[in-house]
Every structure is written in C-alpha cells, then in structure tokens.
Length: 430
Image (cartoon, rainbow, N blue to C red):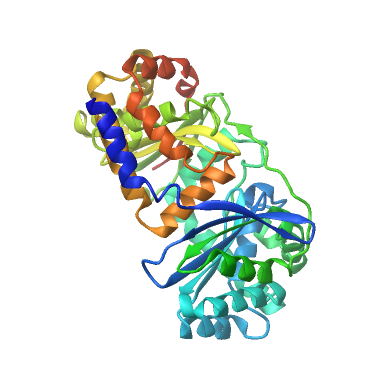
C-alpha cells in the first residue's frame, strides 16, 4: 500500500507538467513540421526553439564546421552587423542564439510576451540575411583558432577528446567537434553557405515553443519563419557502437600538476530499449550519484586518491557508452586506474546491494519533480521524448518502473552488461 501511495504522490507532483505539453503538426509547403507546445501563464515570457535534426556535428564533412557555422550566425545580419544586431536585441531584451550539438542545430529566441513578434522578426532577418561576409568569416576564424590554442592547456578537454577518438575511431563521432587547426584553416565561406543550404531546411525542422502565448499565435509566428526555408532533404543520423578494444592513450605535459584520467567502454543498450530505466538506476549506483556512489566511495572516501570520481551511462540516438573521469596525483595514476577497473569488475560480478537500490530509488523518484519546475525543463523533456520516438509521458512511466524494480531484476541486468569491463583510458600526465 505504501509503495502505491509513494507512486501516486510523485505522479501528483509532476502531473500537469509532463502531460501539459502537446505535439501537433503544421503543414508548410509539402512538409509536415512537428510542433511541441505548452502554454504557461505564470510569467509574461515566450520562448521558441527551431531544432534541425541530423544537422549537428555528426553530419559535418570537416571537423568543427557545424560549430563554426553557429558562430557565424551569431554574428548577426549583413544589414546591422554583429554590433548593431546585438544592440537591437538588447534594447528589446530579446535573447537570440544559435547552437550546434552532436545531432542537432538549434535556433533559439525568448523575450517578454510583448516583444515576441519582434524576436520572430529578427530571427527571420537572420535566416534571410546572415552576416556571411569575408570580414565576419575572418573574425570567427581568428576567434576559433584562438580558442583551439587555449585548449592546448585545457587538460580535461584533451583527455575527454582523446577518449572519444579511442572509442569512436573511424566513425562520424570520431573527430573533434571544435575542429582542429587543419580543419579550421581549410574552411571557406562557401563551406558555411553550403552547410546552411543543406541542413537548415524544412524537412529537418522541429518547433519547440511555449509560454504566455496561445497555440494559434505560435503556429502563425512559426509559419512566418519556416516558410522562408527551402524544403531540402530529411537527413538521417546513424547509430555507432563504442569500441570494445581496451586501449590507452597517454599525453605528457611538463606543466601538468595532476593526472587527468578519462575512461570509457561500450554499452550495448539503445535509448529506446525497455530496460533503459534499469541502466539509469545502475549508472546512479556505480558512479553518477557523486557521494555514495561505488566509484566515489572506493576512490575518494576509502583511499583518498581523488577529490571526485564520476562515471555514467550515456544513451543517445547516435551512440551509447559508459564513461567516467577523475583527477589524481601524478604518482597515484596507476593505482587509480587499477581501482577503476576493480570497481567496474566487482559491480558487474556482484551487482548492487539492497541499500544501494533503496537509496537510488529514493533520490531518483524524489528529485524528479525538481527536474520539471520550469517551462524550459518541461519543453526539453517533451522534446527528448518526441525526438527519441517516445509518447509524451514516457519518462513519467519510467518512474513507475523504477519504483517497482526489484534487486534481483536489477542485478540480472547489471550482470548482462559485461561489455563495460572493456575499458579504454585517456590520460594527461606529467
């Protein structure tokens, strides 16, 4: 009875935030565009994202091009220039940004309700008249090369990048999404223009919007933006398994004062798998929960080898893997790597304890409402559900599965995933 009451309490707290978003369609030209929408009158604010699927870094021919294009678009329009465009937005308290992810390319606007039509107008102008000039191109190129130069002393970046290159070599994921000197120096303005023409198209668009605005108004304003885009081609994102070869990459830097250790392995589960809720619980217990996790207890609490140690399962549309990291003293590097291997080995062999499962449920169920407090959190949740092919409310139903999960079922699941023991390590040390 108490178990049922706990589930009902959780669902009551999040009822109306997970189901209040809706998914509709808009027909524009010959394309059907998904619209994910939620009305929220708590604040006089409206936000909108236009997400272009299969248009992120995983689709680029030259490493770093998607991110470079996003920076070019953040330079404003030819008519106003970067300073004039930024000043116009600031005068109206409008936020407008362009970002590139692994799989998607996103335009985002938000403002007070009274200024939202102006925000839409500026986004239209940006799409129709981007500041794709030689001066703007050279400025972004110089800034990007400078950023790459700074990353030469960002040891977390170096270690995490090399781990990705180890795990996803010879796949579209196996390159630096920031680019490198060779790729950035090879960019041309034509590359940027071609990237836009091919990827910023109707057939890849998803509209995510909400706030103090009616659905009919969002439809009308979205249509104004989308009608100026070419139809284009839909595009696809493939799925790539992480390598199961146990490799190690060591980079030595004279000025390093600690060893930066990143590790990872394959994880043979996809984002839509019915057992994905078990992966969430197992990941929490092994390394994603911070203090109290196996990784933190063994590496920091018992041995004092690191200030923090973290590990988690990543389930995405294009890849799944198990990754983690820690920093330790130079002289403790080998011992820390040995302990990581032992922790993972023992976890797969022995599974979780009754107390660990109890604490994981307590946190995951209890903290869920906090992840859905704001409109942006709720819209992002609804987008992920739609994008991954789930019905709205999918993550709510996962809570029920987590609550009902038995220790026996969890440990059977953990023992099936022997692949996480096939660890690769990327290290930056002295």
